[in-house]
Image (tube, rainbow, N blue to C red):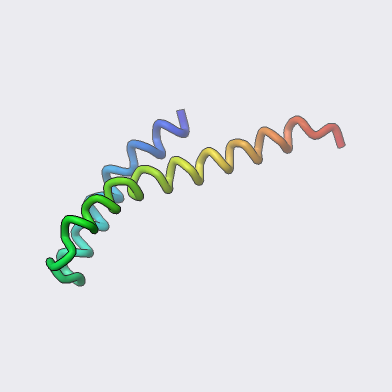
Amino acid sequence: MLLLAAATSGAVFFRVYLALFAILGSMRHYELFYALDAWLAWGLPTAITAVVLKRAGDLRADPR
């Protein structure tokens, strides 16, 4: 469920990054930025959540 929420939040991140680029960036590399933004917006939150969940699972499995 947390991974789904992380991936879904990518839509929000995508729009925020896109707006920041429109305000601060140049339109010269818009297509490249759009492609990178599309992947990073959902990929980073999903990867970070997966690592945190994996680490939490490892801590639970540790018998110490």
